[in-house]
Length: 136
Length: 136
DNA sequence: CTGTATCCTTAGGGATACTG
DNA sequence: CAGTATCCCTAAGGATACAG
Image (tube, rainbow over all chains, first blue to last red):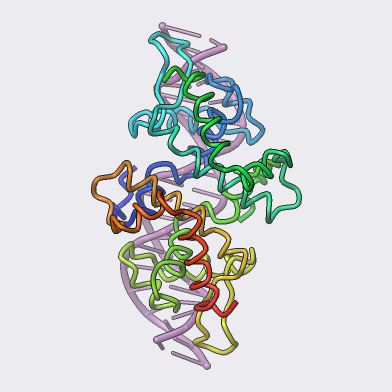
């Protein structure tokens, strides 16, 4: 990507470099909140990303240690790593923010309510489910 | 921007559309965690954004209601709106994540520790300070 | 199905000059 | 200082064909 190294020591910037581009975050979202975990699954997400873009992102995210393949071989499903799973609180806050500021948002009300009321409990619960589901 | 409307009802996607590009988030960061609040201040941030890029982002962020001018006139400083201020929890989680996964990150240890230990208290405190500082 | 490669177009953005 | 405008070029990414 040769992005003239806009690197700085800022943690916000680091986060952006790691998963800050839109397509990457959508892949994370899919792995975290849907049961999509294969190449074609991701392609079928409603945002409609191009195949080459998806391939690029999958490679980057693996290189950065946010996702991995479960098992080896052609159709090995993608899964979150611990590092990727640690984005759960970030995602929840993103969802909460959008729910608050976008009337069109599709996040289930009950879910959003729970983010606010029992954040810790929700995180704990989801985290366990995800670790299970992603083989961690 | 004519971005072939990749719009979806997904709250994550909405967040991305609102402030998901790198430059925008860096402006938010500056307003939230530094005392930079002017055009040249932003330019002097270590990531070094171009003038035209900054101008674009400032316009977009205003249009989306995340930032505003305090007062009118040429050098009126930029400030967060309530909507922008609501990104505080998101930013804190981003910082926490980076601190956890990037050894080079420059976030003060004590700050990060506080995010983990007394998140609610920290948010409340920062929120008050910010509302004060940004005239809300 | 799971990807990779190629082509081609456009928009993002660096550099820089210019304006009030 | 506080921005806007222009130039120009690279890279992101849509469309599509191809490969294992």
